[in-house]
Image (cartoon, rainbow, N blue to C red):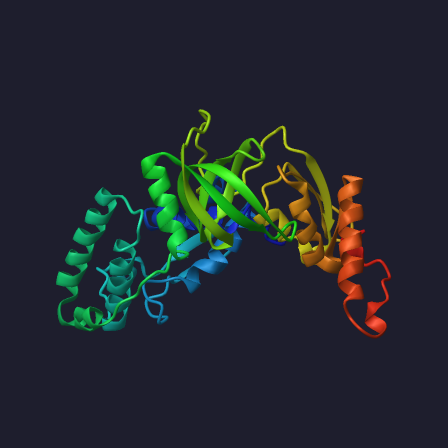
Length: 334
């Protein structure tokens, strides 16, 4: 009897595994569940969880040509591998969406010329293959603001190796500060950021461009220390071993914290929650996390951070009129 599926490490890991699983199963009709689980280094429960999702996937967002995969608990059967393997045909709206997006991305400032040319070549091939279906795309366009002139100034400062002065809003502290930074590179992870050496904190910092209130390119040369560039493909915030340790306890409704925040450990609690140990170069920024969790979590340590989070909750509640202004110590910020 198959038990409750184990929780995947994260959605990205599961997606990568399922893409490989499709190829694996196509080459092994009737594969045994235990053999497949062993080959992928997962439990049988995790494999069954993946197999529950695969029949919802296919070659079209319209719902056609879905993967007809099922299991009797012992073996796995894929009933339509040949149908799904047929060459993909783009519908008119699919071709239009793809071409408009590709042309828009090719105009982004900061895109390397080699990448831009490769994208334009791929776009031309798709356009030729789509034929008349691609006609509508030529009448549509999308442009990106790229955080106004901030992006251009940062890009220029990087190319000319010059220092920047910025007025920057920090939501963690709810304050605007003035800083001089030596820009290192631009990074896009959901939003656009500049990774830089901050002369105020004498440390590497990452600044979101849409939070830059004012920016000036200075005459001083940019001279960041020799530091190893980090791989930011998995997460923008990557704590170091020497960063302060923070312990957060969350209930079942706060388990998402373990998926979104890099952490050292996540231990199960009796109520279905987690005790999460993580590190942060700026622990004060986690105060907002405590407020967001509400009754679904609380900061356990360090004590001064827990106290500040509790005080922030008092101040937030005091801003309301009526009985709800009475603070009864919500579990989320104790």
